[in-house]
Amino acid sequence: MNVSGLLGYFATFAIAAGAYSIASLGLNVQFGYTGLYNFGIAAFFATGAYVEGIITGGPSMEHLGGFDLPVLVGVIAAMVVSAILAYIIGIPTLRLKGEFLGISSLGIAETIRLIITNEKWLAGGVWGLGDIPRPLGNLVGPKTYNWVYLGLVLAVVGIIYFLVQKIVKSPWGRVLKAIREDEGVAAAMGKNVYKYKMQSLILGSVIMAVGGAFYAHYVGYLSPESFRPLMGTFIIWAMLMAGGKGNNKGAILGAFVVWGVWTFTEFFVNYLPSGLASRAGYINAIFIAILFQVLIRIRPQGILGGE
Amino acid sequence: MASSLKVEGLTKCFGGLVALDNCSMAVQEGTITGLIGPNGAGKTTLFNVITGFYTPEKGRILYNGEAIEALPPHEVFRKGIVRTFQVSRELKNMTVFENLKLVPEAQPGEAFWNAWFRPITVKDHEEKIGRRAEEVMDYIDLARLKDEKARNLSGGQKKLLELGRTMMADPELILLDEPGAGINPTLMKKLSNYIMNLKEEQGITFMLIEHDMDLVMKLCDPIVVLSNGKKLMEGTAAEVQKDEEVLDAYLGR
Image (cartoon, rainbow over all chains, first blue to last red; front, top):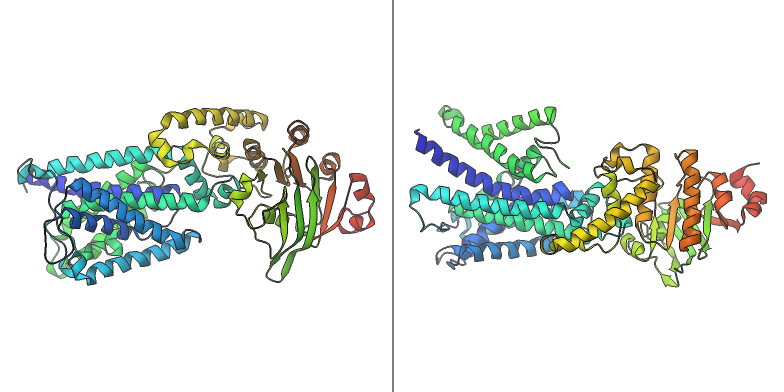
């Protein structure tokens, strides 16, 4: 592979890592700062991606939407829909102890994936949702386009990082941390724990949906298969834990590291003998597992550590 | 700051265990009411029920004439009742300073949009709270540990931090659950002076669970003795010390 090919490969890699790091920042609000176990990231990531695809995509007879609206409208719609979804999930689960949110969010994410898979009118079902445009696509030629989109994604990552950093350092963030440390104390000190957990769940989910929206433009075509628990939820957990929960820089760094290991090993499994090639996905997962074994041994708090 | 607390026929069970058994008592405004009794008498359970951590099976809690037995903990706090915990519950991965700054009510920065849209208001309020927290830290001898994670404090220092939190609130009634346990004699003296001062100068009412009889006898009037989830008797230090039943159940002869 020549240099420009490698660079192009890097741009694609960084776009995906950028989209994932947005989701990882969202999880950091929920888990890193508030201690909420959201195992249904895929639900919000998929919601963001599909809403974006439906709002900004070209007209289609096959499924809902194709409204051909601007990217910003799509992102705002993705945020609104995911906020509503988070609110609905939060009502029954946030009054209960942590594990209940974990189990029910996992279940809800799978339910949403199956709805997308089976309701063809909604988003094309197993055929997927294609024809998702490239934002700012008319500015440059297809060869350099990835760099423009990478710039856009990184700008969004930067803005979200700045906004999240600002609020977790505020008294609001202090209440979240208090809830993470000891809910009872937070309540005894007059904080409405349920309200703050709800705010944290919604805010984090909205951020995840933004990540999903930018992921949609990156892939250009959405299939429900991309939002299975492994790729939709657990890889994002892996990113946050690797980078350092409770650390926004760590959330971003972790996304790049884990996605780096994932794609880098994918590179090699391409050269595997054909007998093993069909198991490439599993071999990939083994490398992530090895990364985790190493981290747990030498740096359990994640690369950058939490606060 | 008027405050009076009345507990009427309170019953709280854990499975087959009756922790509070039709318990009635009152805390008069402006008193330091001591709560003593043998282990398992229901003292801490009473605190937990008053502060909304447990819902009683039966009975009422009236605070200034208002029923509060069904309120969740954060609303009880907003009524002006603040508590400490028997086993310190410091926020481990937060600094001493953060532990204290968390407490004050109605902080503008506790709404997340204010951190984005009204940063100056938030900053001003933070400075105000920060100054108060500095004073509290000076008072409880934790000033030099300001930026230390609370998990690293000693047992006694954690107790002091519990107390510091009540000082950050604007309470009418403070429930102290064994504030003296693990605190050295010098600080203990300071602590009792502090409680006295708050009572005299600010009219704050106290309810105090403590096994250190010197502290109880010195500070508390009246003293309520709990036994088996019920009030055994109530009286002044002298009366309690002479009571036959109390001597049998708790103080010993």
